Length: 305
Image (cartoon, rainbow, N blue to C red; front, side, top):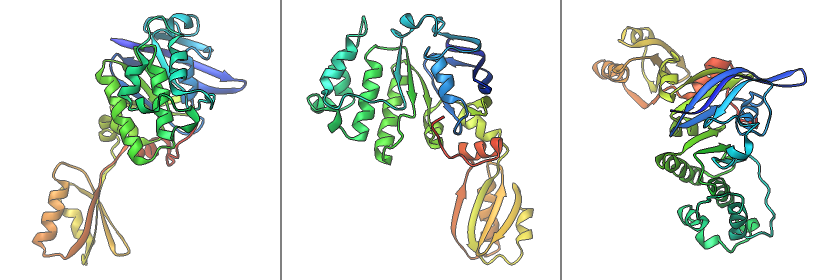
């Protein structure tokens, strides 16, 4: 069942069309990701869906509600974690949780959320004393206090170290396991690839691709690469191997491009059969960043779109 349905959404800022007639659906109980470069229109899109901005064209349905016109009803059903949030530095963790709880008719017990996100020992700490990761956890807690059916997470793990980021990923997956729908934007392609059931890639206000991460990668036509150092005198011979599409020499490295389930096995078997001395062999499979590069013609840099 659809939790969110967007049809022909447009939004203009003067002569700039920030969102250009996009359509997509988000299913209940899935993690849906939206990625794109600076100015792609991601934040404008999510703010229209949250009822924070009025669309100039198209329709949006969130749990059967029209976001901008029915915001009061909508905000009982969704939780929003904004990309940039500023809290009073002299407010304590339990105080801000208590404040947010007062906004809703049927809030979740924030003490349980503090325990779940391992912040119970910080309940009497001032917000200003929290680490970056703890502040991000607090922002999720405040988004979950309303007991939402849909949670919006905007660039949640920006600024976190790798360990804190991976810890946050598991918490996000836990939200889906509880049956909640998660709509996230991120500038980490590996994050979208790991977390999301489906990903929409935006560029210049349009959705240029939408599918599961695996399908986006497999349908991109991007080759796998095998890289090694070795004494291959005639690299043209490698092109005869099944699955090999091209071979290049880059100084001491040999780069073999190809596809197929047995691509790696075929190349290694050939080298061994020829008695080739090789070392530092590594494989590089295509990822979402490669897909983005192919679709847009530029490297993904991350953003505040």
